[in-house]
Length: 279
Picture 1 (cartoon, rainbow, N blue to C red):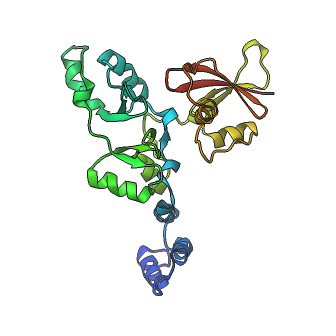
Picture 2 (picture 1 turned 180 degrees about the horizontal axis):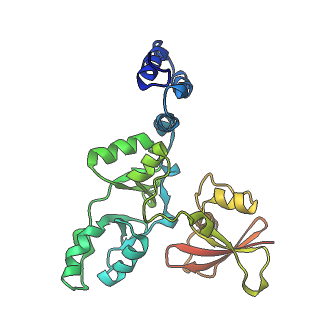
Picture 3 (picture 1 turned 45 degrees about the horizontal axis):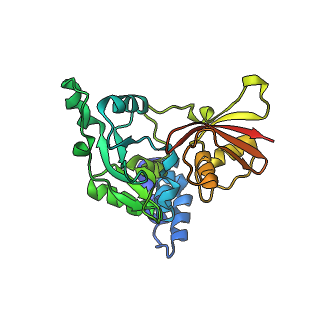
């Protein structure tokens, strides 16, 4: 006689458990949750992740615009190589010069390899980039997963209601909603620890140096603040929402509630580093 923990007993028990067909999604989800004695915990968690996909909007899993590692259509090889090396990404959105909010293509790092062997510094990335896949922020995660699969694409550009780029989503982002965090050799396990560090210069008190890509929720948890993350995902996005369009982001000072934020590192379009001081 086989022990109750054997796989064959588990499958018989599961089939018996599912003998009565559930009539609602909640009933089916409860059956899955109650099947932990038949299935491994990781298996149950993955099934629950699949159930949650239709209820998850793509804006909730995308990388927001503020955190995108990107290129411009007039970049040359010497401009691109440091970005490739530092980020270790394999795909990069290419932004238009004339319309800086619009992605016009996706460049694959592997498409630059022939130019490296030719010892040239001149490259037309607009001739190499691939057609981007555009999806709205409101798209369901399961729908986007199906689109990526059908088009054999690994990355999609997320656009807002005005057609401007609001973020990027990758196949890995969606799969992580099912199987949990996927770490590779390029992932930094201490990344969150680098989001916020105390500013010890000039004896500063109640002052921190904050990465612009820091999630608002993480900032609130670490520093006991209460900023809303309903419309923006990151601290950089929070500041951009407050100041709107300005000619020069660097040096801008933004006061929100009892906090003063100073932008200490930025380029023409993106905030990188912030000094945050609690009054």
